[in-house]
Structure formats: structure tokens, C-alpha cells
Length: 201
Image (cartoon, rainbow, N blue to C red; front, side, top):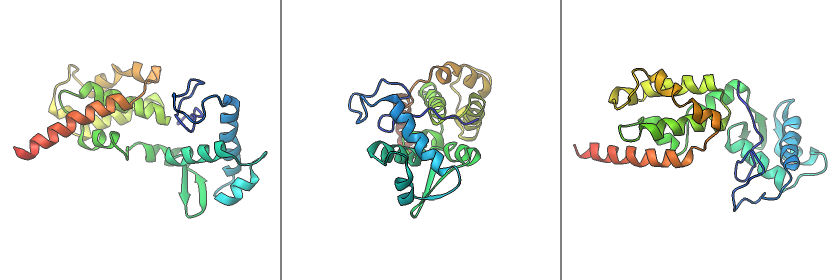
């Protein structure tokens, strides 16, 4: 089941502790949740004209509503076509986020992990799937399949005997809700170095 935790539209935190440079530091958490609810309630009946959406929000449209809508679009929860915006179904969203489309996650996903960055790559992918709202079961299935399909498992360098064990040993990453960016960037550096070296072999 895909979840949603009303992330801050500026820094993505799901608590009242914002990033230091966040535009919404000090904004009431109630107001952040309300901005999302206002938008989602109006979109429940189907696609909506974006300009009509801004006119129909109870209490008026403001920069928090605009930022929340943009966050929903960037995160793939809402699809934007011309002037129309529409909620993705849970299945559409799951398919959309199962394949990361921007770096550093795209490189990790497409190239697969290499020895020297397995821990960071698996950590990052699990943390990323947790952040976008996939359940643990969906996350475990996706990461296990990625280990096989990307060639990471065949490259070796794991202590475990099966990909499922690698994923199970990282369940704490999912449960604790760790961030993915630092580990993803570290893994991408190793993968990029390996790809560059392979071009000269």
C-alpha cells in the first residue's frame, strides 16, 4: 500500500524540524497538511483545470498551496497535462516511482551497484522507496529484483548468500526512515568511476 506523509513542500520533512534554509520554517504543520488536503479533496473527482483548482480552494490559494501542488507533481503523485492536473491511482504511482528518473538514483538503478558501494547503493534505494511511500513489501520486492536485473548480484562482493538476505538485513533503513541522498551520491561516485575505468579496458 502506497503511503503519504504530507511532506513539507520545501524541504520534504515530515516533522516540524525543517531544513535550515526551508521557505516554510515556522509554518504550522496544520497549515501544511491543510494545503495538501485542500488540493487532494478537489482532485478526488477527476482531472481538474489548474486555474479552476486555484479558484476553488477554501480560504484562497496561496504560496503554500502552490508549493504543495508542485511537490505533488514533482513526486509523481499528480500528473500534469497541458492545463489539467490529475491524481495518479496507487497503481500508477507505484509504477511511476519504481524506476528512479533523476540522478543520483537513476545511475544506481540503471547501472546497478558495484563492489565498493553495495552498502551505500542498497541503503539509498531502500531509503528512496520508503521516502516515496512504498510499503516494506513493495520496497523489498523492488530492491531484490533490482539486485538481480541490474547485474549487481552477479558482480559479487556481498556477504549474504541470496539477494533477499541483503534486503532483509537493511530493513532498519526502511523502518527508521533514513534519508537517501548522501548514500546515493557516494554510491554514484563509485559507479561512475567504475564505468569510466571500464571504457578504457
